[in-house]
Length: 223
Image 1 (tube, rainbow, N blue to C red):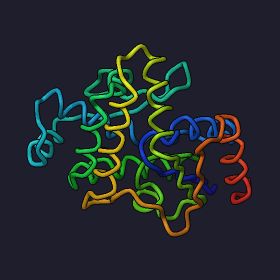
Image 2 (cartoon, helix red, strand yellow):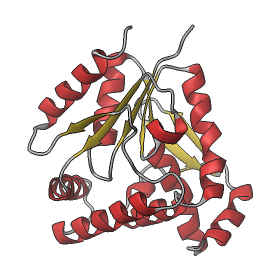
Image 3 (cartoon, helix red, strand yellow):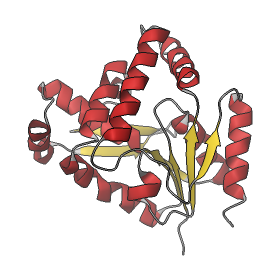
């Protein structure tokens, strides 16, 4: 039986995870947050005190990165058997995730894991290069974006809700740096796939963004 795949790419803070999760639930698909996978490797690098490509690549043989879906129905990330789902969402892990995602050995290490999920299940997968590299033949490709200021405002509110210390100015600076890293990395840079539909949610409410995204996908996929 054919498995359907929806690829949602876009810059940090565009709402990919929130929207992809809701869309997957509405469609009855499995939601795969690939950013969380890279964050887990980034956490491993930070814990090891490693910031260079060679040092990070050397860590990979000893890493066991796994994802599972708990009783809460949410994706949980495990690093060598430890549930690190909450820790990888700390702001300082974002830049580590961006750095490790630019390392060819890391991308190769994680690529097949992501493709295997899409080969056996109907999935909604979000990230930076899903439609261009991971799932180039996805049934639907979306490039979800919003103005940097809008993305920073959303991310800042999210961090405050989680009880994490942050300022809007710092969040905007981090997002701007991550955008530059993601768009200019030599391996699988962030870009819109030629056949992706761009959905800009600047100034649109959460509910309206969800409706727009779901309608866009449903018009392009026959279930």
